[in-house]
Length: 265
Image (cartoon, rainbow, N blue to C red):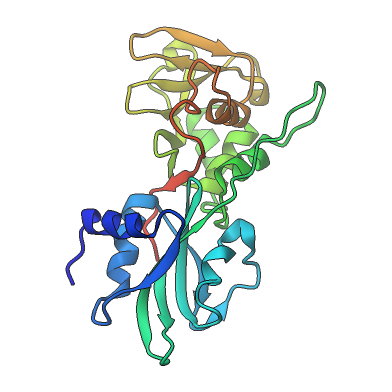
């Protein structure tokens, strides 16, 4: 069975709504489907491997997919995609034969928690919750001392946590997170930490010695600088969920995710 992205989309359409699962032809290599979905949705999380279910799997990490297989799952990889969990791998059928499977289940998307004045908010943790991120830290061993020495400046701590947590990829497959700042606008006092396909550049204005107090500045495709009095992770949270933000993505997406560019294992 030769698969394409169009074939996968057609299969998914048969399962949504309200979700469910299907056995696929026994001769199909399940890794082919995993690779295709990874190309569309980013790096998956592993729910089941060699008949062993990850004990940390719960409703926030795709447990709804496993309910379909009633303990017969052999290997299941899963992706959080908007209000869906999408899973593939292998499971045993009623006769005990291991077969490739594809499954879709509804995902409950956490609502962002309102922020009261004076609250000390962990915006990176909030961002993890908004995007439904379930992966372990993607780049926990970044040598920030080397990066900062090369750039000649310290960097905001929440930005460094975002890189360590999410790695290379894009929020809502749109806002690409730089793995280290671009210095193209350094003469203007700006460092670029993210960008979009519309040539918007997301920067900090490097005023003062404390990078955790640097304001975010968006440079639009026509060269306008738009300042925001907030830090990096807070800015991303707000453009994801606030429909009134000037650079909002909430008008286009009801739910939010991080598409990893890292190759699946």
